[in-house]
Length: 309
Image 1 (tube, rainbow, N blue to C red):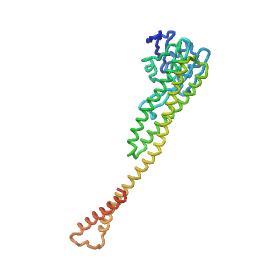
Image 2: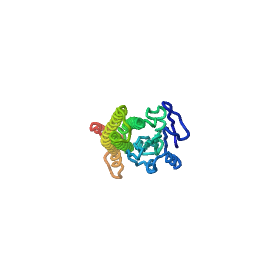
Image 3: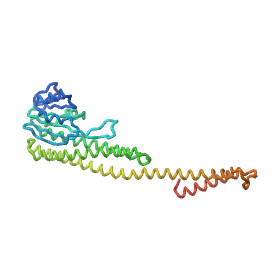
Image 4: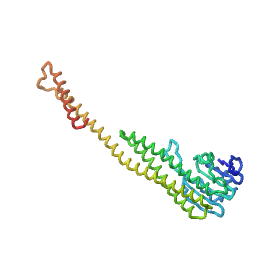
């Protein structure tokens, strides 16, 4: 679907048709919509890659067209094992247009169209690119906080868990952090290439904004690295906790089995069809029952002192 935001000075408005000096956003575009984008001057060799989820972050220039790819985070559907992942967003800068394309719906248009950045004017493309990268850094930080909250919830269940389900959940969050770390590293390298190359027009204010964006990206990388280290150590610790919990349960069951075996042993002996001491006494059943209870209590006391129960 194509969404078009017309820019006139400081005013923006939605448009149903592609017009010069507008921002065009495409979310999972169809072949017909890709043909419309090609008609406004986007080279077809660039459009081939816009729906590729494996597209890496990069920047290239073809005549007067600049093609930039960054990976932005998004939350997966509930049915997915990995809760958070990243997908490439293509930014194509033409003389009269700014075009952004995402291979799946990630809400980029809604985020930027509510309060459009000052660089949305196609004549000021540098600030738009930097604003979009800043938005990406902000999204990474937001999703990272959600991951940390989810890990805390899993941690509460892991303390008493005997199953691998919680450990596998942590493993899935670790995969998300790997995606985040890889994408942030590639964005940082791409931004440094932008700063050193002639892909965009730079003014002092843009240079200052670019430094701020680079700091945000590096800060997000730092937070992701911290979360990865904590999660790795947590998984190692909780793997031992699950094993210890299982050992505790097995120890308890073994103790209960020994306690139950005492009256069973006595009953088995006096159930034999052979002459036994005291079998003719009137109180033999009561004596055997009391002996079984007494010995069981004695074993329970011993096990309690040994911390088996």
